[in-house]
Length: 370
Ligand code: F0G
Image (tube, protein in one colour):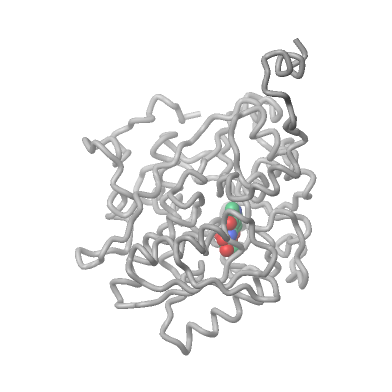
């Protein structure tokens, strides 16, 4: 393995080039992004998220495999969407837009709202009524988005906003907006900057299939620039009840507790298939039970709290671990923060707090079993 963690502060990292603080991903990767001096940069200093070793996961895979998680839940609004949104909103502002619109399972709406408002624009968000995690809904509301909950799923909401953006003065900021993918590809740059090369495998949750496409763009661009010697196999994971890329046909009524990826007809379908073919990758379905097992493992053994959809990357790795080559380096993307979805956490953590204890030392000691 060429990769080594000793290159964490490698000169390849823009962060290490004498800057005292992270400038946000547009400034950090400006030469690789479609921005000019005329682009007004709307940023919350997103990016530069940690690549954390997860030894308890690696141990379950065995074979001397190194496993890291790219914890993108530590972005300013708690998900990877900030990477795409800083660029999409900056470019919308450059083009003179005064309003943006998106359909969302929650995270896109939170990011669109935060960046649009920071950029002085209105944000309209369409969400599937009753299927957006509480934290995400709270974010969209508090950032000041105009939140429209429709009696339908993400796919229904998406077809409405797509049509709207054609005939009304609103800029679409879903991942069919090319600037979204351009921003999101920077996560691949950061991984290479830290590891010194691309990983052997990149495991990633797939919903609308924008992020897998963006990562591949990033790895390919860095490869062309000579920043990495190899390209990873792109391993995409969908929830079993919402797995059109595995069944090969749209799912009319997608169902999964991982609401972020409850999508039956991904907008970036063809691009994702092209990535899978070019990288000799694979799409695999993981059940809700497998997702929850990985979710609990990450939190209770690694100290990392992600949202259920994000845990599908680790659930997927554990499901196909027999295929991992010995000594490989694997990165699993954790796309969103666990705090986004407190209801799922409390419901599925297999743990309970002990209520109603008398406020005395004796009572507490007794409850602790000493
Ligand atoms: N993980 C999380 C936490 C997400 O919110 C999403 C997508 C994905 C994974 C899948 O990424 O769509 O690029 O394949 N969330 C979108 C939203 C659909 O509206 O927030 P993808």
